[in-house]
Length: 215
Length: 227
Image (cartoon, rainbow over all chains, first blue to last red; front, side):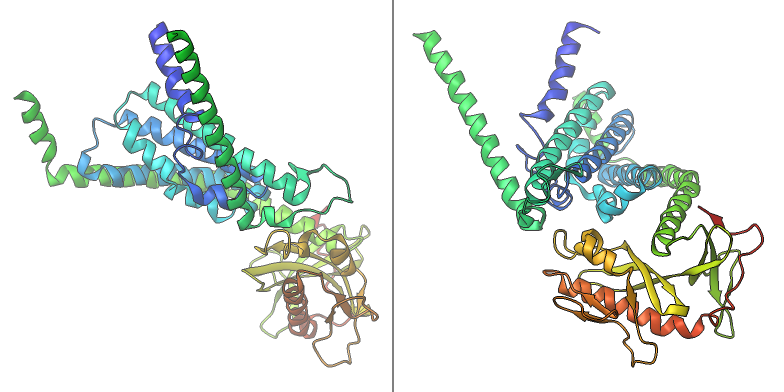
C-alpha cells in the first residue's frame, strides 16, 4: 500500500469521526439517536448494528456500482440495506436476546436511517471498494461514538449508573427526565453546543497561528 | 463526444435490464433473509424458551421442573407435552411434587401491551410471584413495574378470599393493610393498575379451568423441563 493510498484511506475513515460526523456535523439519523440512547448499552448495540449494516451495504454497493442502472439504483440500495438489516436483526436476537428486546423496533428501523442510504448515494456508488469500506467504518464509528456519548451521559444523569453499574449508591436521586424523550433533546442540544464551540475555538486558534506566521 | 455517447447509453438501459437488476436483487435478498432466518431460528426459539423457563422458576418458589398445560375441549387444563398451545405451566419441586402454577397473561399497559407471568397456588389462593416479560412502559416511571424491587416482591406474598366478588386483588395508594391489596408505585399508578387488572382478569379466567387442588396432573415420567 503506497503512502498516498494510506493517507487517503485514513482521511476517508477519520472524516466520519469528527469533521463530517453523521450526528454532530450532519445531524442525520436523529430517530435512533434520540430514541435508544437512554442507556449506554442500548446506544452501543445500536451503533454496532448500524455500523455492520453500513459496512456491509457499502461493500456490496461499491462492488456492484458499475452494474446497477442509475434509474433503479435507489430501489436496489434499499433492497441491499433491508437485507443487511434483517440479518443484523435476527443475529442480534440470537446472540443478545435481552438487548434485542430493549431495542425493539429500532433495529428494523435502521433500514430508513438516512446515514446509510446517504453514504451509498454519496460515496459507495462512486468509489472503489477499499475507500467505501473505510468511509463506512468511519461513519459507523462516528455514529457509535456519538450515540455512546449521548447514551452514557443520559444514563449517568437519569439512572445514576453506567452500563448498568450503579455509580452513586442508593442515596442518588436520579434525574428521570434525562432518560425520557425530552432528556434526549436537551442532552443532544448541549452536546451539539459543545461540539460547535470546540470547532469554533479550534478555527480561531488556527487563524491566530496563521496571522502570527504572516506577521 | 464519446462522453456524450456513453451518457446517452447509460440514460436508456432496456426495460428488461431494469427489471432484471431489481429482480435479481430481490432474489438474492430473499435467499439471504431465508438463510439467516433458518440459521438463527433454533437459537432464538431456545432463547425465548429459556427466558420463559427462567421466569417460571422465579414466580413459583421451589420449582425445579415444569410441564405445559393446555385448555382441553371440555374447558379443563390437561398436559400439553408437544407444547402446541400452552396456556398455563405447572411447576414441580425436586421430588416431582406439585409446587404451583405459572400463568402467563397479557393486557393493555400505559403505552403498549404488557405481557407477564405470575405464580399461583390454588390450595392457599396465593400469588407466589410475578415477572413482567414484555413491556414498553415509560422509562424511569412506568418501567418501575419491572425495576421497583418493593413492587415486584409484594407479588410474592399476596392472598385473596375466593368467596369475595371479583376482582379479587385491589390496588391501593399507600400502605396495603390486607393480603389482597397491591401497593401502587408512586408515579406509575397507571402501569401498576394495568398489572393488577391483567392478573385479576387472568385469575377470573383461569381458576375455574384449573384442576381441583390435590388432583393436579402429575409430572410426566422423566419428562418436563429441568432447571
